[in-house]
Length: 135
Image (cartoon, rainbow, N blue to C red; front, top):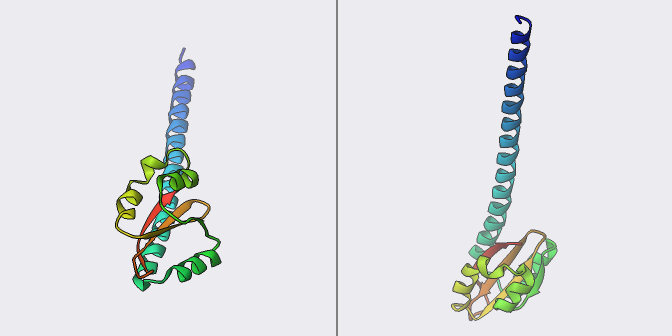
């Protein structure tokens, strides 16, 4: 009987140690993925804000984004275009775009692998506002 208790105790401690280790590993992987997504989104948002500081014309915006491999995928920000580019759940994610599209006469959609940039242009043809959407 005395031999069984230490063995059972060791197994219990080993099991707890494995669970704690796996939990810590899972937490580390989750936090790493969250931090990577946050950094990726902040880089895209920073790119758009720096672009707006320069107030470029539409041709310059299109050329610059095209050089980075981001293609224009829409020439308006209508619900139909958003649904085509973003998929069936576009309505839930495009509230910001709907609020801005009534203020500006022109909007263009540019799509990269993971994000869609919506650039709004004022009556003078210069970039006035943006929206960043995840695909």
